Length: 389
Ligand SMILES: NC(=O)c1ccc[n+]([C@@H]2O[C@H](COP(=O)([O-])OP(=O)(O)OC[C@H]3O[C@@H](n4cnc5c(N)ncnc54)[C@H](OP(=O)(O)O)[C@@H]3O)[C@@H](O)[C@H]2O)c1
Image (cartoon, rainbow, N blue to C red; front, top):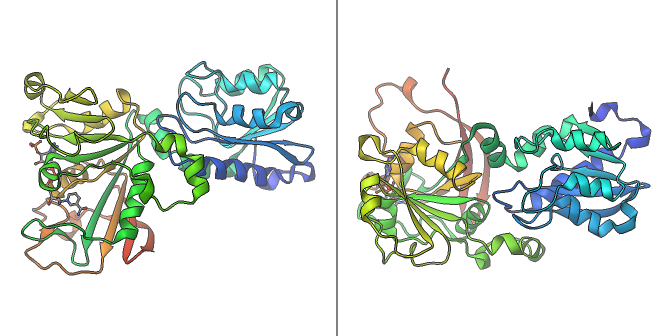
């Protein structure tokens, strides 16, 4: 495989970055393909796009196969631009490398090697062994990885990506002293959260929130602020709800809760004793025993289980101050998303995080602001935690 920077491309391939960008745009268009990565593919022959495709989710044709289907006989002699190394293994669908070879594709251009050990480098090796030239456009590597941050993280570390989302007032409060918290933010922010949920493999909360708010934590497609085209292209994956996960050491989640009684799979993590005593209230609810040092479920073990047993790439934590603080204190938050409503709740209202006891500002957890935007009437702030040396 030859690695090239955009500045190294000669006149004959000057439009390669345009096609690679299009393949990445197609992949980004996919809200989720969990547990698979979001992938886009563009087939080009004689400077004309002859096929395009993206992957809609497990068991469905991969992006390359969709694009080949569109191109038909025009795939012969074409160049394939794919946002991730084509797969070489038989999964729920056949190997894309073989499909590309069978269709007579002569070149494959990709930005990154697939970190999945079942694929990594094997797709490239197969293509090259079969006379197909493979090029890597290294300037697109970071953008391609950013389309699948959770998939990359799971393949590389065995843990999913964790986004912690919280809504707060201008004075950093999440509920009134009497517990009232609906709604802190406006409809725009709440619709934005729906999109975050839709893009996640799992939405995770604590038993405190289940008991206080009785949430469903599901995706309501009608509330998603996306175009009709995006709704149509994501029809299959949006029909499947993300896993709903509750951390509930003593298994106090009521059988009557909305979470348990709404459509979609629910996983409740608790201690082994409680799990052995409690009967799941339906086939869609699984009670999973996990390490509980200090009497509470161990967050790292939960994440490990979500990655290995449930193939979760991206986790959205929507919990109260106790569990949110615990995730932060354990250093397990990759992205913090705050929706800030322009309201004042006062000093007796409840805090954002339960953590206490700092003695100096030097001990304060520090974040980098990645993005700030106005969503409806509220402010959305995306932050990444700074790693202390
Ligand atoms: N503003 C927002 O964005 C937002 C979002 C969600 C909720 N809320 C509000 O938050 C309030 C509830 O907050 P909360 O703090 O009581 O509930 P929470 O953070 O949702 O859940 C806390 C519970 O999680 C369980 N848990 C399991 N493992 C844990 C661990 N390793 N570390 C910490 N906790 C663990 C604990 O119960 P066990 O020990 O029994 O397991 C703990 O009491 C409600 O008023 C709700 O409206 C606000």
